[in-house]
Amino acid sequence: MTGTFAPAGRAGRGRYVRLVSAFAAALAPVAVLSAEPAPLALAATAASLAVAGLFLTPIAATSYVLTQQATAPGQRTEAFAWLSTGQAAGNAAGAAMAGLTAAAGPAAALGVLPAAVALAALLARSRLPPDTPAGQ
Image (tube, rainbow, N blue to C red):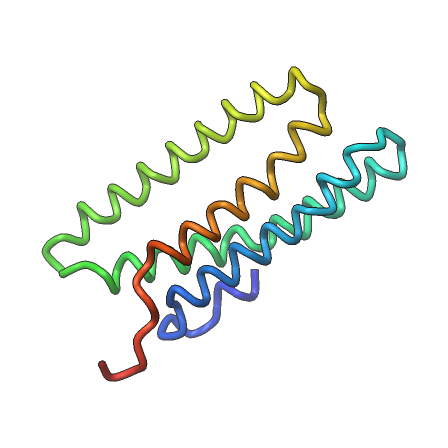
């Protein structure tokens, strides 16, 4: 959560991609640990999910700053509406994917997590405009 309080001027594609990549890396142990349903693995999975959850607020804060920087003042309301809609649609799609993969077992459902987040990091890296130096 402390990453949320970083200066807003540092929010850019690079920071966003780094945060999402770190989120994917933090979810990787969840996929590995879910393969062995044992009490110790369950506790380690819970701890991994708690660590991964620390990336959610900084990712959201960075996405809001990027949206503000990328839009003209007269279009920000629409831009933030699209951002909120995208986040809600992503949550719904993720829940649907979890439901579909749950039929294959918990390991498959939890294994999708880091893969989906890593795909999001790759898409962000390829689709977002590069960071520009301050003052440009």
